[in-house]
Image (cartoon, rainbow, N blue to C red; front, top):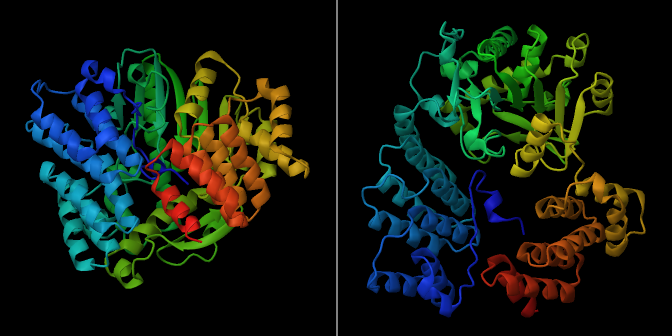
Length: 570
């Protein structure tokens, strides 16, 4: 089972132990006691206890909110909603009763899981607290689009566009505007070209150029800089992009030309240049990090200027893009790479009718964004940067990158010849944006600590080279080389197992999932995944055995319960 929390892209979950004993309830915090009541008696009884308790002291709102999100992660959405409503009731004057982004992510997960009524309950609660929120209006628009109610969706998107015309592709399309292209003009005041978070007196600045092209900075607790250790103590700098200064350019009709797109990309590089120059004028050490389109802006910047940054990290973007990403594209479509190797044409807006996306300028937005990226991607930066000193670069690429495809051996050879440190993650386009990886990267940047390889890479290499592998032999072999690899991470192993499962390599998937149950014997998800592999192989007995183990660890695992009921009924 792929965990629900992975769908709540930026959701922060901090799980508490929920096996509180009766003899400790009296000394526990209100939230801990409430949590124990839910576990032992259910949400209704927990609420009744809270309402009738004589102590009636206020609880910690953040602690209770985190409990709600933990329950949502476990699939207990009714309980989550009840707790959020309790927060609203108990703290009527607070603007921090819940995190709006998390609640909207839960709603999106629910409607995509064919639970629209539950989704509406979360959306209605959010609208009650945030009636003038652009995000609250937008999520209704997306919900009604998913339900096939296009006119109602447009109503909410237009309202969202009035509140904030920059924050969403739908909204900029629905915004009434003169559609003629107007070149981006950069303000003279450099301080208007970036957002700074943290103490500006810090001697070290971490600069992050986000992906996109985007219309607004996406600063949150899961962006690259907030994933760094002690992020709250760091000076974090977020440069703007051309489209953030000039969002109307993405609805230009006729669509952007190659020359216009190149100009806008160069403007973004100029913004970055002025930002870095300003920081260096203040005698700061600068670490520059870019992901996806943000990395492409950095490449353009490196071509135009000699960067004074101490270290530069490029993530999720090739120097020489595989131009099959743009072959055969039609309006409103884009290419995704299956397993990082096979280009697949997909509609950008999923299952929306083409007439709807065309009539509402949505295709124009997609085509203009694509043109900005394509114009950069057509450049061969292995040639353009061949005469540059790249020894301070770190290049991070994903083996299963669905946005760019897998980097070529030729490009890696070029980078190695230029002294660039190359690092491969074994996940998708965003697989390097984790606390674990960014922590390792930080240690390397600040202290020069060697970045090791991931255990999953060793496992993959062993399984590809040797057909006669089993769990015990892999464990023993890894033990001999463990100093060269980071400790095992459950999600990485689980993802590798699913790669094999998707290719119908069932024996390999079973071995990988089996390794996860060995290393993480208290993980319900590890046994759930192993059960799924056995089920696909047709071994119902071992499938049942592992689903039962999953339920024993997590009694409210809805996926395991449903499948086990089906197996028991056979």
